[in-house]
Every structure is written in C-alpha cells, then in structure tokens.
Amino acid sequence: MVMKLPYLGSSLFLVLALVSVVASGFEKGLPILSFDEGYNQLFGDDNLAIHGDGKAVHLTLNERTGSGFVSQELYLHGYFSASIKLPADYTAGVVVAFYMSNGDIFEKNHDEIDFEFLGNIRGKDWRIQTNVYGNGSTSLGREERYNLWFDPADDFHQYTILWTDSHIMFYVDNIPIREFKRTAAMGGDFPSKPMSLYATIWDGSDWATNGGKYRVNYKYAPYVAEFSDLILHGCTVDPLEFSSKRCDDIQSPEQLKTRITPSQRSKMHSFRRKHMTYSYCYDQTRYKAPPPECMVNPQEAERLKKFDPVTFGGGRRRHGKQHHRSRANRSEADSI
Figure 1 (tube, one colour):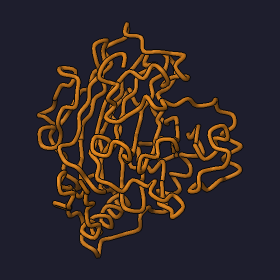
Figure 2: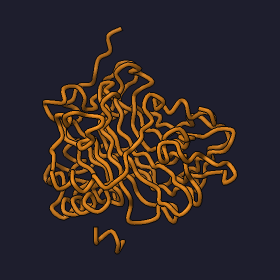
Figure 3: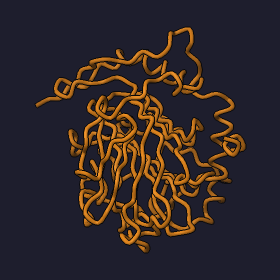
Figure 4: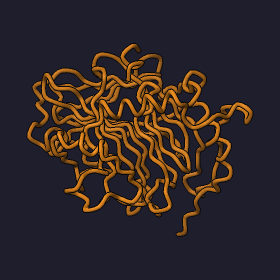
C-alpha cells in the first residue's frame, strides 16, 4: 500500500498564523478542549482520572502500571500545549512525557517531537529533556537537557510544542527554550509526517536518573502528574487517505508577525546560558563530528563540559511508550 502524504499548501496559512500567535501571546485566544473532545485513553485503566469538568487529567504511576492518553486526531503541523504539574518528593526513575509521534503508523521511519520530564532523588530537581526524530533517525538522538528556574512540582506550568514545515519551537511558560530549524543537510530527518499528541507517565528506572543508578521507589507511590489547559490547534489529517481534513484558523494575514520576537529570543538565549546542561551537538563521545544541523558555539561547548555525562534510554524507548504499560517494562521568568 502506498501512503499519500498531505498536500502542504493547505497548511501554509496555518503555519504563518501559528508563528504569529506565538510571537504575540498565543494561548489566550486558543480553545481549551475537554478530554472527551480531543483525547482517548492510551493505557493505564483507572490510573487515568478526569477532573475539572472534563478539562483536567491525572496520570498515575504505581507498582501495577503507568498511564497515558493520546489525541483522537492526527496533525500535520500546529500548536500543542498543556499546563502540567509534576509529582513531588522522591521521583527518581519516573518519566513524564508530553510528545508527538507517529510510530504506530510508521514503525520503521517514525517522527517524534518530545518533552520528557526526568525525576530525581529527594532534594534534587526535575530535569527537562527535549528531542527530535525524523524518518526513523533514532540512532541520531538530538537531545537537550535543562534545569528549570522553578519547581515544576509546586504548581502548574505551561509546556508547548510549535511545529511548522521549517521550525520546531519548545516553550515553557511562553519562553522559548529551544529552536530547531530544518536544514538541507538533515535530509529527511526533520519530522514531516502527520503525528498524534501523547502524554504518559512511566517507569524509566533503567536510564532516567543518573543512568539507572537511582530507580523508582514504589514506597513513594502513587506518582501523579496533573494536566490541564489542553490545547490542540493545527491541521488534522485523515488517517487512511493522509489528506488534510481541516486547518484551524487563527489570525488574518495582516496580523502575521515574525516567528520570534527580539524579547523572546533574548530570553531564550538567557535560558540556555543559565539552564542548559547538555546538548547533543557537543557530545564527542556519541558523535565524532557534530551532526550537520549543529551550530557550534565554543563558549557553550566549554560551559557544558562541567556537567556529568548523560545516559539515554536507547532502544528501550518508544513508540507510544509501549514498554511503559507495566512496571517492568512570573518574576523569575522575567529575569531569564
């Protein structure tokens, strides 16, 4: 069977409008969906609970299983966001993920865009990891890791993925933390096929905290990740024909602005200077030469040397976090 990919022209207006919305304050005008309007349960039975008139979801990890949900629609480009409050106390080995993927459809050449939250021992902070895969390029991890300027277990904070045909942006509380641009040298490694939106909590003891040194301790279970303000805004795609079904309108062409404002870019550079602890572009153990899309900054490379080596999940990760289905398996922001 030959799968036809969507005609990109139908999503061009959405792409332009999305980058404008992000630059100008975005989320305030976008609809927040109830769980039943936009999502289905992925796994976890009663470890997934719906709250707040159907617009909040609690995902639980205990000794029996983790849990997760998935969007009802496939999307080609768009704006995907949630306010998330992470579990507190001892969370070593716990992984909470908010990500896009199409691994259930393209098993050998899937795309993926990730936020992963990696738990820690008591007294140590959660860490965020972002990653991008395209066309099954899982052997070339494009991970970055960061600390945060707040405790993500104290309150809700907004995490956003903006995906267009040429850019991927990751935001925390409307502050861009990573810009990933499509380059000719990447070939097909830029995500370009329709994807679903996923959220999961699972046991990543083998790698998530100090390379597996600290594992999930179920004495502290249940671990509960809370999700609210769920936004799905983009071009939906028919899962059989792979033709574009609908693109959400956001703003008129005369309101379009640049992808990222000077103020946002300044905050992004400040965040990365203060809080980034790892970038694949400087990992000489994994890559003899930086991958072709990397723009090497000698000062950044020197600063990142002081951080410990990073261990990743390797082949045990993905898709749909299928191995997660069982245990075995703003003042401070202004200163960024």
